[in-house]
Length: 251
Image (cartoon, rainbow, N blue to C red; front, side, top):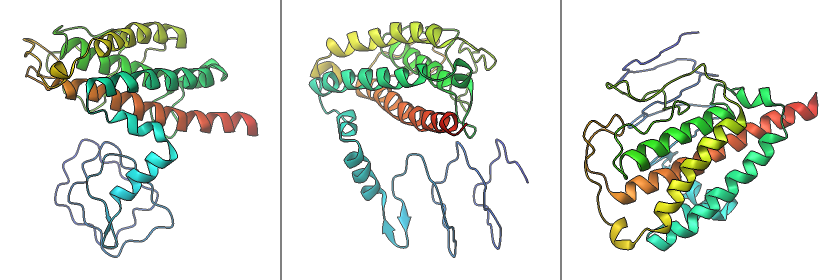
């Protein structure tokens, strides 16, 4: 078995190759073309513009089905300030439900990675970092708001060395939730005070910012990033909680 880590394989050709059981994570698949491929099961998870299967772009069908399966997902695409005010309490409630599920598991399982994905606690740590980046830094102008327990995405480039990346930390659930509560309160306040004019505006560049890089960002992008992060990572966390719950039931 070969591992390809941080490699540029742009334009590579694979012909008469067995890729069964392979795992691709944090990969750019733009323009990938598969001809004569076959699989009894192929699982994709990510952000896809066009996803053409046997000549049919199935991406709109997938998006519509995801909305059907979870109607509150539609709320995560707000178009105005009031839409954000509707969406945020849903985020809070859904995470409260996920945390309740997590508390019913043995504490050590909350540090376990399922199929190589972030553990439940690592997921919460990442959301701390995401809020620090897109709200405290980009939106509110603090160049270094990053909490020591925050966890950036693995491919993030930080030439400043400002963003903590302690992969060995094992905080308790309550320790992480205390930080999360502070961050979520800040987001809630920003959304409560949000106007359509502010939402349509841009941020001031933050000198010396580690992440996101110093630049002017659309306010909609900053707050939209938080909604997307909160929604998607909760979905992933609940998927993995289900695996851990089933293991306990089967033991």
